[in-house]
Amino acid sequence: MSTAMNFGSKSFKPRAPDKGSFPLDHFGECKDFKDKFMKCLRDSSYDNSQCRLQSKDYLECRMEHQLMAKEPLEKLGFKDLMDPPPSQADSNTKL
Image (cartoon, rainbow, N blue to C red; front, side, top):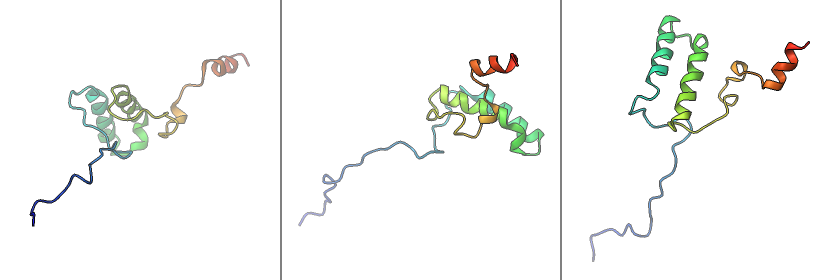
């Protein structure tokens, strides 16, 4: 009787991390954005609602450097911080 187990029948298939899990910023590409966000949190007694712009900038940096999946900022809760499309902005100034 063989004591070795047969693992050949099942193969491990890696998958992408669940939402909310993402690689560390080993090269510090977004360190400045992270530092600004953390400073804002400390200065506002950790009231994250006061630091939404810094949070948005940090997440945009992470998406630009493929440190997290690209998501529309509206889906991440930043719809109110988005600039209106140029055609909409122009029509608002002509009123």
